[in-house]
Image (cartoon, rainbow, N blue to C red; front, side, top):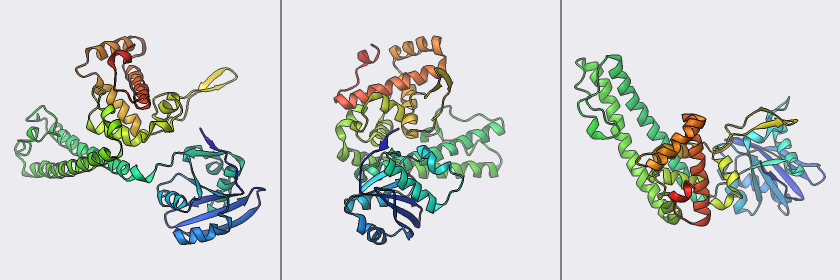
Length: 347
C-alpha cells in the first residue's frame, strides 16, 4: 500500500458521482475553506477551486467515472491523486456515511499523508486498454453461447457432430440438423447467429487494438510474444494492463499487483490468516493463469517442471507457482528489454 505524502497549502477531497460531486477543501491547519455540492461540470469545478489553485491537491476515490476529473486536473496543472477504493477503510467503515462526510474524510486523509494511492492510467493508452477489456467481455459472451449449445445436446443425450472447439466455424456444421424438433433447431440457430456476429466484432476489435499497439509500444509487444504459449491476445492484455514496467519499483510489487502472491496476516509472531485476495489487477491474474497453462503445450521441460511441483504442492498450487514465475520473468524481460530465455527460466 502506498500513501500520498505530498505537502500542500490546500487539500481537496472529492466524493464523485455520475452527475454530481461533493468537494471539501482544507487548508494546512485542517480548517474547512469550502464544503459544497456541485454538478459534474468542468467549468464549475475549476471555478470553485480557483481561489486555491496556487497550491492544492485533489483526491478522489477510484470509481467508474474518475477519468474526466483526472484529465481536467492535468489540463489545469492541478495535482491529482486517485484513491484505492479497497484501502479507504476510513470512509467505508464509518458509522455515519454521506457525501459531505466522505469528501471531508478524503481531504483529511490527504492532509494527514494517509490517502491510499491507486495508479492513474494515462489517457494515451487508456481507451485502448478499455477496448481490450470490452473485447474480453464479448469473447466470454460468445463462450456462453457455445456452453448453451453443448448443454442443449447434453439435455437430449446427443453427441456433438464434431469434437473440436466451437469457436472454429468448421466445427459448427450440422448442429441445427442434429435435432428433429424444429424449435430446438431454432434455439441452436439463434445461438450460432449471435456467435457469428461476435466473430465479426471480435475480429475487427483485434485489428484495431493491434494497430494501436504498434504505435504505443511495439518493442514490448514483441518481447511478450517470445514467451511460449503467449499469443496475440495475451500479449496485448499484458502490454495494456501493465502499461510501463517502470511504475513498479520491485518485482515483489509487480507480483502483488498481478495477484500472483498470497498475502499473509501475522500478529505476535503467529499466522492469523490471509486477505486482500481482490486487491490487484484481475485481468493480469487471468492473463498469467492462462499463460501458465498454454506454456505447457508442446513444452516437455515445462511439463516435467510442473510434475515436480505437483508432487510437492498439488496440481492447483503448482500451476499458481508456474504463473508466478512467469510473472517474475515478464517483469525482468520488460525491465531489461530482453526476450524470454527458457534456460534462465528453469535455472
